[in-house]
Length: 359
Image (cartoon, rainbow, N blue to C red; front, side, top):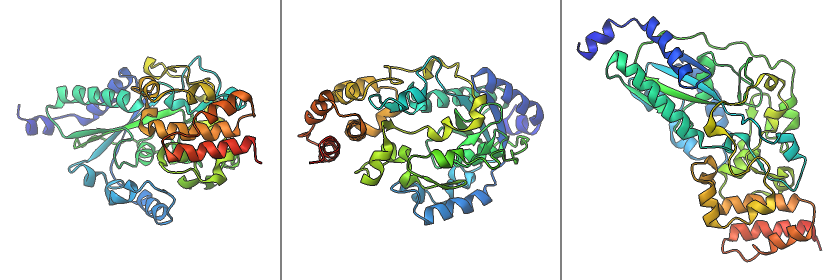
């Protein structure tokens, strides 16, 4: 049967139901479907960009309205299939235990395992193949935090949760420790009810806990102050005003999620790929700072951490060592990098050493 005839005769209600079952079989905890209107979110995005709160993430400006208008990014897009997948690794050292020990290195829990981009994109591709087996060839593209996509707004509209005051998506049965991904499609699928109820109420725990006051108000995050931005997106020098508040966080920050009461309902992941690798849930700062570039490349292979590169890795750990209790081992480790070829690394090492010997 020609594609057009097959699609004309398709029962899209049944197909949508099947897509959700297939999503669950592929390891997604939830799958929803939404249309493409993001006009209200576009206004919020434009205002955020005009205020310069995206920092040096210039790509967010360069994409124009493609982020908030899916058909501009992928012509012909009618619907977005949004999915979520739990990532909190089981049997890992509790985050608070690491954060309370300044000799340890804190890595955001989403990054202690395999790169989520690859895991989820592969599953989305498999979902597309399952759909294609029923519909015949159709238009689609899979995205996982890899293109100009307003993924949280789309997930909210697909019924997966609400956007909390910290700007993360929250699900009432699963908290916020999950990844989201999208399949843009030209299939006219029936849509799910958007999640219109916001359950944050009067709670401001995420705003109050932020070490750098990056959450400047409910639903307002200034990336330039955010530790995740400073340790991952920023490629230059970390402003001195934020170095002390960074503490021992060397890659990302989870504080706003750790205090969110809704994460009492979070579930550990069942995905083997998201289990902690190389002891990154409790490694010492000195151990990681002593990695050679070859060790860094080997141990971050297939990891989201790889994208920041070895230079920023050392920069981040140097700051954390500056915040660690003074010891002979800390001083020796920093001093060994004092003449590092990178000016960026040297700058942060010198700052760290001054924290232990201000005179």
